Amino acid sequence: MNSSKLDIILGPMFSGKTTKLLEIMDALDNQNIKYIAVKPQIDDRYTSKENNNFIVSHNLKKKECQVIQNLDQVLVQIKNNKTISSTRSESIEYVIVDEGQFFQNLYNFCVVCLERLNINVIVTGLDGDYQRKPMGEILNLLPICNTITKLSSKCNVCQKDAIFTHRISNEKDQVLIGGSDKYIPLCRYHYVLENNLLTTSV
Image (cartoon, rainbow, N blue to C red):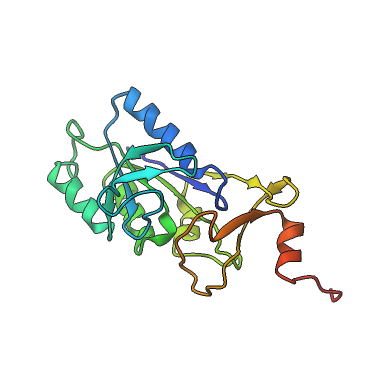
């Protein structure tokens, strides 16, 4: 019987997604549960190019991970660890994907892990970009996931719950890696205000 599960952790920047993920990794380590943790090569915040193999939160807590360009690299590693079989004595039980919105083929990768390999998957990422538009494939996972955790930050203006990421620089590309130098979290009221979205029409 396939008992694998997919857990998704969503939220704007500065909402504690990575901190929560690091807590999960600590718990898996304490239980001696085998897992692979990966992050996209594009995400080099808080690390140097020579020392980028860490998942790092905004408060600079970190744990070692693999830095990859393509999720197929994980499947190759799983196969080499004899996980693709009917027995799981040598198997990896979890795959952890940080910043999932940056990975192509995320949906298919999760389906393979869950339904072919019986491996649990945890994915964290942004549920929207600075324009509140979907990023990558992460929202495609909602129909196939077991749990969704939606985190919020604190509004940079009023300190109420913030569910949006607001870009404070002038770049227009959807993908722009950065921290507090590029983004701030905002509540709905201040996001609408800052982006001139107020309208009198209904």
